[in-house]
Amino acid sequence: MTKTSVRLKRQARHRRVRNKVAGSELRPRLNVFRSLHHIYAQIIDDGKGETLVSASTLEGEVKGQIEEMTKTRKAEVVGSCLARKALQKGIRRVVFDRGGYKYHGRVKALADAARKEGLEL
Image (tube, rainbow, N blue to C red; front, side):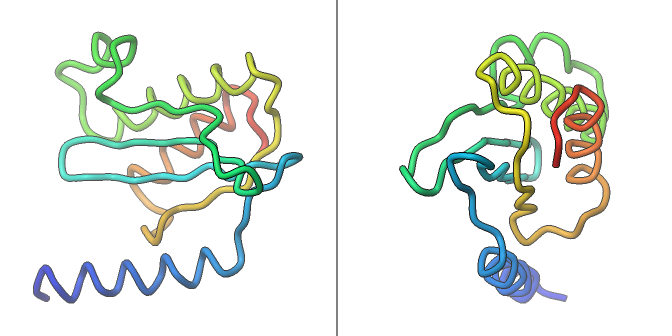
């Protein structure tokens, strides 16, 4: 499979997911983006169009913890960090937007870690 066809399939899955998933003030959207080396997660209020909380492997507090870890373990750390930040802001319930990625590996690890910290997906 070529890189282009993989990217196009992900984009088609993402469009399908986004047609069904939307964040609101009561239940914002937890969005996930993963690149080759990093993973990013943010909680978004789609009504206002603003990011409420974000975390990634490039952040200072996460970056110090994740050296010499696997990408899946890094995703768990990002999920835990995001959940702690969200709970501090009073966000308990979110809608999970996997961004067109299959619910497997790093995406699943991030979601499970967020749940474990107390975030309701």
